[in-house]
Length: 429
Image (tube, rainbow, N blue to C red):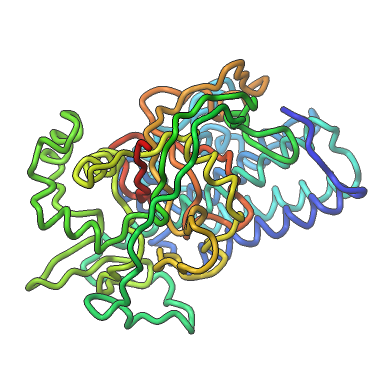
């Protein structure tokens, strides 16, 4: 792993952040019942209880486990809460995580407390070497990834309930009535031009980054234009009303077959009743906010919509080059809304590049030139998934603030819909 940039007292800062990140995960689980934390709504999602345990397993395995004198909290947890680290040993089947009724939620929370106390003890005592400190830093970013997954998995779970449960009410000051036909139109989407040339992409080595963000390298881009804002629900309704899900000429063959097999007729969580559209949110079912960015669409849908609109998806390098020109600001999970909101059209020509919704790109998730995964078991973190996935950029309303960068590469299969994934159009110039 690359050396981390640290201030004059790295131990104190790591301890502060460790406490804050761990507390945030507990806070996210607090509105949920034990039953909510147990159930797994689909094979790609995980129960909240598993997220709570796995993030703890990470610190126990990769930080505390470096000390030969450390004794695991429960030996069987090494197997039950391993995700995919084959070098560590066998992992419990992902689609069957919801069957783990034992250990109980109370036992998992006890596990969290035990590991937290041990990490704080060795950190305060200065007993963690450079390698363990780097793994602790990685563990914080890993847990932030799972905080977002926890929210999206909970949303998928609660959406299966016909009573439309509320995970968290919208904060005061968020106008829940500015929806549907009454919403103010967002001004015409502009095209922001970028000239052809060679640019540098990838992480430059200052501060933390995942291994898949580097090394930094040159790429040559043709002239292109990027939409000034993401595609909105209002835009997407035009696609739906044009029978976009039934028109094969806009779809890749695999995507059209997937849409037919899954019965897709609109984005995930949308519903129509007597001509009125609504959307399930973490605040329950609400009227569709027409000028908010569309969310919960797959890469297949994003690609089809781009063809319908006479555009295309940007490559991840076009997106990164454009994003480098705007402030790293946006609506993130810390704001408490937990749902995309309409653009604030003031300021930068490019709005909502960060936060609100992840933006699909045209790029396959593949290694950069001279990419080398981290050494040891931790090298399984990213590199082994570089097949059959597509890259998303920018973060979402469920991403912790400060967790993303312009170089951050998220990735999911092209049929994934349960993340806060949206679309920004690109055009050849």
